[in-house]
Length: 259
Image 1: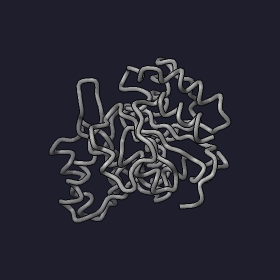
Image 2: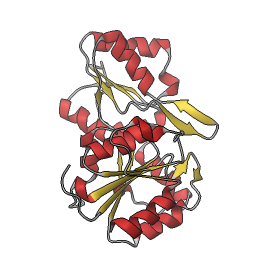
Image 3: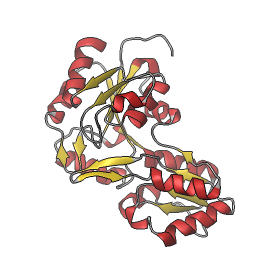
């Protein structure tokens, strides 16, 4: 890891860190305002595949978060970029609300499989179609491989177990484009004029948010909201730089110790 310098960029996870579905984490809006008053670039990074970026932005605005569309970097964006680079026709296993971020791509006669969080498509017929495509040589692209995420009524399976099922059945490893991939975090910093040693990531997922960011050379702050469970911090090495009760506590630490 490069020598640590003063923090100039803060990457913030969304679901589980700033909000859980349509409810904001208590104090998160005011904490974000405080963070914006500091001399740091703020970017928002998310693995969510349940909705397109525009719908996500509207949800955040309704919760009174001051966030602009060009500040959000999503795994859907990263997936589309990869599809355009590979020039393939994807079978898009994503929710209908996420399809807008793939508008204009040719999806006829698919020769690639893209899988995100798509509960309505995790049935035998669709999974078998994906299985046959991958078995015949189509690349398997996972928007992310989260094991689970937090809903209002409790934890719910993420796309990871379904990606793993296809990998197991086809003997093919998926290309993962979202967190915790290093390239995802480095792309999120594009335009900030900051290196990873000048950045900190705040998130509720120990592996994907904190572990991924630290592997990319950043500091990682784990918050105990969202999907966090007791002893999560022991799942990665090195352990998180810091563990906080919530996003507001993480912001206070940054303002007091890292600038």
